Amino acid sequence: MLFVLLCGLIYFVAAPNIDTIVSLAKRRGFVFPSSEVYGGLGSAWDYGPLGVELCNNVKQSWWRWLVYERDDIDGVDSSIILNRLVWKYSGHEATFNDWLIDCRKCKGRFRADKIVDNKCPSCGASDWTEARPFNTMLQTKLGAVADDDPTALAYLRPETAQGIFINFLNVQTTMRRKLPFGIAQVGKSFRNEVTPGNFILRTREFEQMEMEYFVSPSAEHSKLVDYWVEQYLEWFGSLGINRENLYLYEVPKEELAHYSKRTVDIMYRYFPEREKPWEELMGIAWRTDFDLSTHSKNRLDEEGKRINPDSTEDLSYFDEPTKQRFYPHVIEPAAGVNRTVLAALMDAYSERTNDKGETRVILKLSPQLAPIKAAILPLAKNKPEIVGMAKAIKRSLQPVLRAVYDDTGGIGKLYARQDEIGTPFCITVDHQSLEDEAVTVRDRDTWEQERIKVTDLAEHLQKRLKPYPLATPPEPI
Ligand code: ATP
Image (cartoon, rainbow, N blue to C red; front, side, top):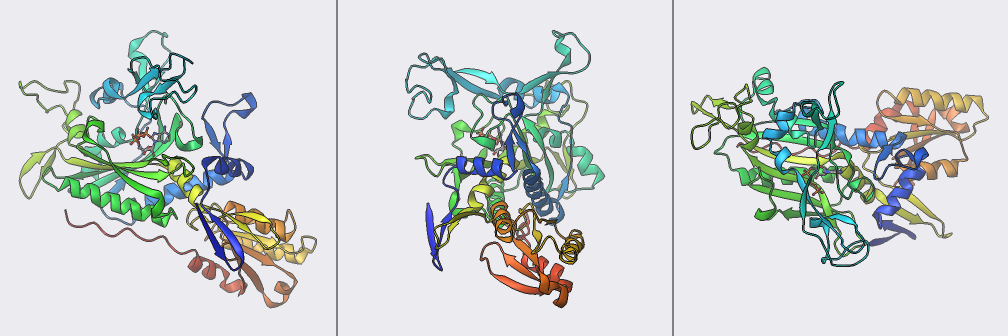
């Protein structure tokens, strides 16, 4: 934990634990427990007015960074429910399992790989049943069919990646892509987690930002994994996530997924108060050519038999320069929207105590993530000219940045409320504004104020809402 003494004011930097964020998130309209009027639904959360903006800002930042600023990545939005055969050939039906164990003493059920020191998290005993597999794909039934009709079985996707692989040729041919290139997708995924929990860190319904980067089989795959790790460290930095709170975990061979030859997880310090503070924020995997080849009709096994007799397509690629046909290899950075939001909130959290001993929460969100960029506050809400001018400023700023008008309290309260939700700028319209056509701009982090002409305001704010650092262009591969 970090304490910083600045001009007689004490900052307490980063949230001490997830619970601090849970309470702020509920108090200020970021995240609410879902279905609360019926007693809730374990580990499901609803995003409120500020939470939905924060999630959208994370997703937009990611999309701009990968799809717009680079020239080698396209986006798609595939269905959540895919043909069941996708999950058969991807290996998910057979292997997308968590290993379950039961505590013989308290009958609690847990994921075997999450048990620390062989002790039951509920009762402390160490008397376990044998581990057994549990498939975590969420099932549903399609159409008006009988309950026991096995042909109606379908799954809610457990990852967005497969929707990209099955569209590989569609994107490659319509966008006339040559290797290397990537396809990005952001959307909901579902997993029937055995032990969901820790707020939005592990839920059964969540959102992923996945990108499949297709490269030649002869590319330097391990170097490309390192390249994407660096790129994402830079992107997380641009979201205000402190490098000190990130840690790279090289997944050992025996823990790799069936499709992966190398995976590096970027872990975040979600539990600063615990001895083991790290949990996965995202993973970067070299998925080899497994996915494209497994969905292809032409791939043969060692005896010359088709591996996939159900596929009607061959997802191979013809490389003009070498006149060779092959299945591209894939480097996949897979990140969670919700875990990114939680990390950004934890790193942005700070408390400031003034010399009267009053403590305030200040959410130092990166301006690109802040749900509201500027709050326009009239100093006197019973003065129609001041109110009119403030509302007009709000309307004039709205096309360039997210602005709100607020007159629901005294100025001190309004400042405190905006600090707590991370609004970078408060703009106060006062009596003098009516004469000099200027307003006071107050900075969230320094509490410094400056007087700015209304005509210069939009440009001034845009300059100070610094753009995020761009990712460096890719090395030739
Ligand atoms: P974990 O080991 O924590 O279960 P994972 O390795 O299974 O995660 P991936 O399959 O690599 O996760 O998924 C990519 C990303 O999707 C994760 O890094 C995480 O950010 C997000 N994610 C996965 N499962 C969940 C979940 N249940 N709730 C919220 N986010 C999730």
